[in-house]
Length: 244
Image (cartoon, rainbow, N blue to C red):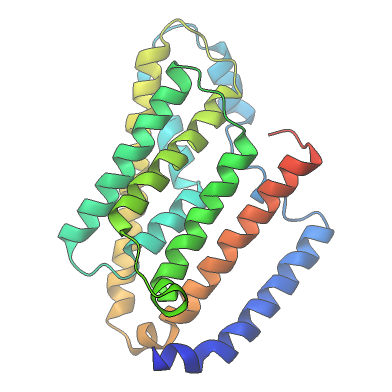
């Protein structure tokens, strides 16, 4: 914790510089990708044209959505950042997977209507939560440590609704909807496994170097900032009435 306190001035300068750069990009209109994480283009056209069960393409779409889902990936990165035992990684990732599978399928099949911007803002909050936890913020600022297993499972439910809102925005055909959504969910899990394997490989290599101890705090500070930026843009979309 002493190292963390000594690192604060450096981290503050890094965050200020990154925030200024991101603000400049936003003013110039170059940061639209924060709002654009969804299913569009040819993928959306394919979904709209699908009239029956077509499981494999929906598996591909699910995997693609997860692998390119920077909000989900940032959260997973935060979750595994300080997990050194594979057993712990499996427990937390399984809890997250169960959570988002439940609400992904329930949200689409039961037509649960939630605001996409608010859901994505909470997803941004989940990124903030995990980075703040990794920095020891709860203990040092509030004097307590939340149950991370409950938190990860709960945020998994929110991430599932985030996936569901992207699908609800498309013209899903009722014919074949159940098998297609199951296929999409399986694809999401496969995409998550691919992304997780890559992240773990990188983390394992990084942890063997001296730079991990030097820059782990700074990395989580940047993840924290990214979560705040995601929240900001989603809340702006909600209050300004942008199209989800």
